[in-house]
Length: 264
Image (cartoon, rainbow, N blue to C red; front, top):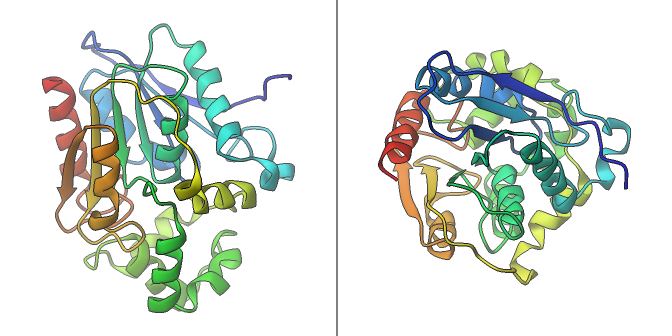
């Protein structure tokens, strides 16, 4: 099968620290630019060569017209394709759906380390969907408009309550509206069914699982099993929501990751 054209952002380290490069994998409804707001500059300053990709059908990668046909296995192929072009095996850093993609990558390809931010629980997304439907019954009806970047005042409040900390002013979310896009129905179905999937081999490597104290999508209580699965370290960032790389406490999240990478 012909490889898809995968767009990447490359931020070379000004003063390389000699460590492997970092490959960032975005979550659902977003693209690589979500990393470029805060994390890529911060990791760059710490001496890491940074690459972030747009998964198929996202951002500037090909396949937007057939987005709903891409599943997690397709996204894992995208990551493997980018990894093959890097000079060294990279440290894998993912967010939400991107963590599920990384976990599939690790079933067939090793890595120096992996950082999983707000990962999809090992049981899948069904519990999260039910919880969000009960607490925020309007959310799923608003997803189509929100994923097109259409946000009224009610939508901004909803996005803040679900994805960010209570300290984030709703109007502050407007700066991120251009990062939002539709997500694949196939990938959403894959995430819902994770609990029924038979996992393949689990390689031994350093893994950090990180969540936000106020994450309404995947609360800390739901992601601890991911850390257990990988025998990894588990950290919770106080006063942070689901979007650990965009919410107000992002400097704390970045600092914890960098410290962990230095100690591994």
